[in-house]
Image (cartoon, rainbow, N blue to C red; front, side, top):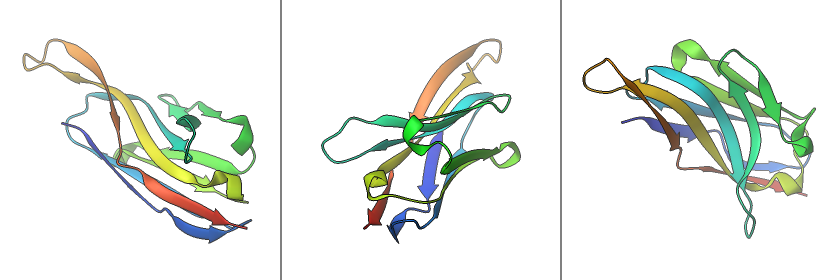
Length: 125
């Protein structure tokens, strides 16, 4: 069973910075993508940034130029560096992993997705 553990959230003033980390543990044959989503109070969960196997990245328009996603493959860890934070960035940030693993026969694989528990980011004006 794969588990994601997030850290790095907190309270920061506007224009400040935070760095989120997400460590994946458990049985993983391959990772297809890792990403960060956020959900503000009363709103739907939205994609913030994603890094796909191979290194290509995708960002929400609202964070382009301010946030940077990176990944340490050896540590199964994804980071989100958030700069120039704004009050509207306030939300619970969730880590997501899409990957595959082997069945018990080790001859076939299956795809799975897993979410972290979330970490609160609060930006004060």
